[in-house]
Amino acid sequence: MPAPILPVEQIPAGSSPSLLGNIRTSAPVVARSSQRPNELHDDIITTLHLQPGEELHVLARTIPAMLVVTDRRIIAKDGERLALDVAVEEIRRIQLDVERGRPATLVLVPHRPENEPQVLAVPHEELEAVTRVVNVIGERLRLLD
Image (cartoon, rainbow, N blue to C red; front, side, top):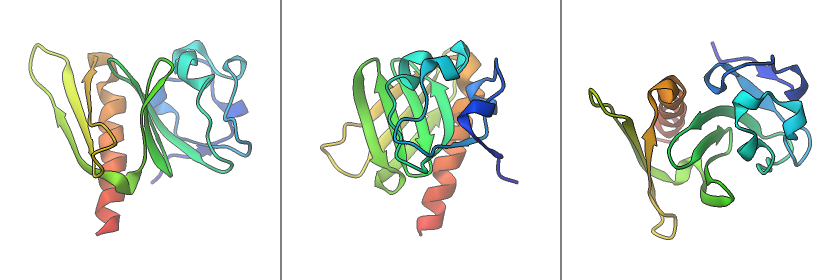
């Protein structure tokens, strides 16, 4: 069963990104930091502009970027720099490498060479959210074939 879609105002305080479910936006800007708990990485929430009706499915903190998956695109945001912003169907390969005693590594490779591949370290506490990212992207890619 898919996660429920929650309006931004109804996100429970202290929710972790991997437990959010989906958030549907009705305005071009998803939220301001005052509408979200600090645990949701205010640095990206204050600067992330989602399109009207775009659904935020997963947020995951990686090093060096915040990874965001919506119903339309995949975004990797490194501070003020937008490292990746592509439609799901623009992803050629996604790979998650988990090794004992080391942070996991997530690799996102877009089809187009002008979109730089992303190699992201995954802190242990974000592994659940990142596996959800892989699952969401993998399911969407499967549906394209």
